[in-house]
Image (cartoon, rainbow, N blue to C red; front, side):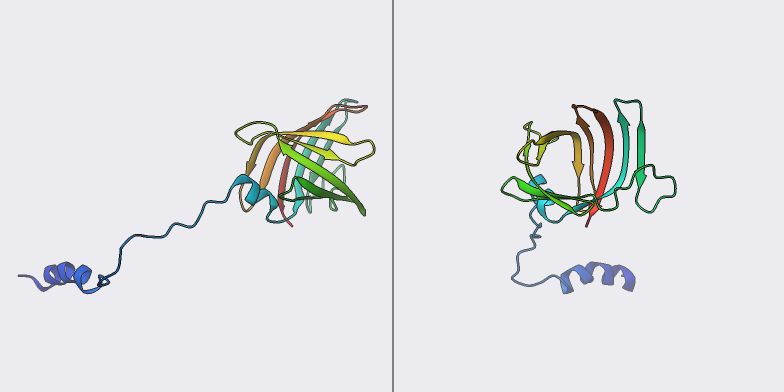
Length: 150
Protein backbone atom coordinates (compact mmCIF):
# COMPACT_ATOMS: atom_id res chain seq x y z
CA UNK A 1 0.00 0.00 0.00
CA UNK A 2 1.25 3.47 -0.85
CA UNK A 3 2.57 5.32 2.23
CA UNK A 4 0.75 8.58 1.43
CA UNK A 5 -2.58 6.75 1.17
CA UNK A 6 -1.94 5.02 4.49
CA UNK A 7 -1.10 8.36 6.17
CA UNK A 8 -4.26 9.98 4.80
CA UNK A 9 -6.33 7.22 6.40
CA UNK A 10 -4.47 7.30 9.72
CA UNK A 11 -4.37 11.08 10.29
CA UNK A 12 -8.08 11.40 11.14
CA UNK A 13 -7.81 8.47 13.54
CA UNK A 14 -4.64 9.76 15.20
CA UNK A 15 -6.00 13.28 15.73
CA UNK A 16 -9.53 12.29 16.75
CA UNK A 17 -10.01 13.32 20.40
CA UNK A 18 -10.77 10.23 22.44
CA UNK A 19 -13.85 10.30 24.60
CA UNK A 20 -14.95 13.76 23.45
CA UNK A 21 -18.12 14.72 21.70
CA UNK A 22 -17.43 16.14 18.23
CA UNK A 23 -20.28 18.66 18.35
CA UNK A 24 -19.29 22.24 17.76
CA UNK A 25 -20.56 25.02 19.94
CA UNK A 26 -22.16 27.78 17.92
CA UNK A 27 -22.13 31.20 19.57
CA UNK A 28 -25.56 32.65 20.28
CA UNK A 29 -26.88 34.84 17.50
CA UNK A 30 -27.32 38.45 18.55
CA UNK A 31 -30.81 39.87 18.32
CA UNK A 32 -31.55 43.14 16.56
CA UNK A 33 -31.92 44.74 20.00
CA UNK A 34 -28.50 43.40 21.02
CA UNK A 35 -26.87 44.84 17.91
CA UNK A 36 -28.70 48.17 18.26
CA UNK A 37 -27.84 48.68 21.94
CA UNK A 38 -24.28 47.33 22.11
CA UNK A 39 -22.78 50.77 21.40
CA UNK A 40 -23.57 54.27 20.14
CA UNK A 41 -23.94 54.98 16.40
CA UNK A 42 -22.25 57.94 14.67
CA UNK A 43 -23.38 59.37 11.35
CA UNK A 44 -21.26 58.02 8.51
CA UNK A 45 -23.27 59.05 5.42
CA UNK A 46 -26.61 60.84 5.14
CA UNK A 47 -28.40 61.97 1.99
CA UNK A 48 -31.60 64.02 2.50
CA UNK A 49 -34.33 65.56 0.39
CA UNK A 50 -36.25 68.28 2.26
CA UNK A 51 -39.76 69.48 1.49
CA UNK A 52 -38.45 73.00 0.74
CA UNK A 53 -36.66 71.56 -2.35
CA UNK A 54 -33.30 71.51 -0.58
CA UNK A 55 -30.97 68.53 -0.70
CA UNK A 56 -28.34 67.75 1.90
CA UNK A 57 -25.38 65.43 1.76
CA UNK A 58 -22.93 64.35 4.45
CA UNK A 59 -20.06 61.84 4.30
CA UNK A 60 -17.75 61.60 7.31
CA UNK A 61 -14.45 63.16 6.25
CA UNK A 62 -15.94 64.19 2.89
CA UNK A 63 -15.15 67.35 0.92
CA UNK A 64 -18.58 67.85 -0.69
CA UNK A 65 -20.68 67.98 2.51
CA UNK A 66 -23.55 70.46 2.50
CA UNK A 67 -24.32 69.85 6.17
CA UNK A 68 -22.21 68.91 9.19
CA UNK A 69 -23.18 65.75 11.09
CA UNK A 70 -19.77 65.17 12.71
CA UNK A 71 -21.37 65.37 16.17
CA UNK A 72 -24.54 63.40 15.27
CA UNK A 73 -24.64 60.28 17.51
CA UNK A 74 -27.52 58.03 18.55
CA UNK A 75 -27.44 55.81 21.64
CA UNK A 76 -30.14 53.15 22.13
CA UNK A 77 -30.75 51.37 25.44
CA UNK A 78 -32.54 48.05 25.95
CA UNK A 79 -35.26 49.73 28.04
CA UNK A 80 -36.36 51.65 24.88
CA UNK A 81 -34.80 54.93 25.96
CA UNK A 82 -31.76 56.56 24.47
CA UNK A 83 -29.83 59.73 23.83
CA UNK A 84 -29.33 61.90 20.75
CA UNK A 85 -26.13 63.95 20.72
CA UNK A 86 -25.84 66.84 18.27
CA UNK A 87 -23.65 69.95 18.35
CA UNK A 88 -23.16 69.71 22.11
CA UNK A 89 -26.85 69.08 22.87
CA UNK A 90 -27.77 65.94 24.79
CA UNK A 91 -31.41 65.07 24.12
CA UNK A 92 -33.38 62.18 25.66
CA UNK A 93 -35.14 59.80 23.29
CA UNK A 94 -37.51 56.86 23.35
CA UNK A 95 -37.77 54.27 20.59
CA UNK A 96 -39.82 51.27 19.54
CA UNK A 97 -40.09 48.86 16.65
CA UNK A 98 -43.39 49.22 14.80
CA UNK A 99 -43.49 45.92 12.93
CA UNK A 100 -42.99 42.26 13.85
CA UNK A 101 -39.92 41.87 11.59
CA UNK A 102 -38.23 44.82 13.35
CA UNK A 103 -37.45 46.63 10.12
CA UNK A 104 -39.46 49.73 11.10
CA UNK A 105 -39.07 51.97 14.14
CA UNK A 106 -40.08 55.31 15.57
CA UNK A 107 -37.79 57.51 17.62
CA UNK A 108 -39.24 60.26 19.79
CA UNK A 109 -36.61 62.99 20.29
CA UNK A 110 -37.18 65.29 23.27
CA UNK A 111 -39.98 65.33 25.82
CA UNK A 112 -41.82 68.64 25.95
CA UNK A 113 -42.48 68.89 22.18
CA UNK A 114 -41.05 65.64 20.84
CA UNK A 115 -40.09 65.16 17.22
CA UNK A 116 -41.21 61.76 15.95
CA UNK A 117 -38.82 60.33 13.36
CA UNK A 118 -39.69 57.18 11.39
CA UNK A 119 -37.06 54.65 10.33
CA UNK A 120 -37.76 51.94 7.74
CA UNK A 121 -35.81 49.27 5.86
CA UNK A 122 -33.57 48.85 8.91
CA UNK A 123 -30.49 46.70 8.31
CA UNK A 124 -28.03 46.32 11.17
CA UNK A 125 -24.85 44.33 11.76
CA UNK A 126 -21.96 44.70 14.18
CA UNK A 127 -20.32 47.09 11.70
CA UNK A 128 -23.13 49.31 10.42
CA UNK A 129 -26.70 50.53 10.94
CA UNK A 130 -28.50 51.46 7.69
CA UNK A 131 -32.03 52.74 7.22
CA UNK A 132 -34.34 55.14 5.43
CA UNK A 133 -35.63 57.93 7.69
CA UNK A 134 -38.49 60.36 7.30
CA UNK A 135 -40.12 63.13 9.26
CA UNK A 136 -43.33 65.01 8.58
CA UNK A 137 -43.45 68.51 10.05
CA UNK A 138 -42.85 72.14 9.20
CA UNK A 139 -40.01 71.03 6.93
CA UNK A 140 -40.48 67.35 6.11
CA UNK A 141 -37.68 65.19 4.78
CA UNK A 142 -36.70 61.78 3.48
CA UNK A 143 -33.16 60.54 4.07
CA UNK A 144 -31.01 57.47 3.56
CA UNK A 145 -28.62 56.97 6.44
CA UNK A 146 -25.61 54.86 7.32
CA UNK A 147 -24.17 54.87 10.83
CA UNK A 148 -21.08 53.19 12.20
CA UNK A 149 -20.19 52.18 15.77
CA UNK A 150 -18.91 55.05 17.88
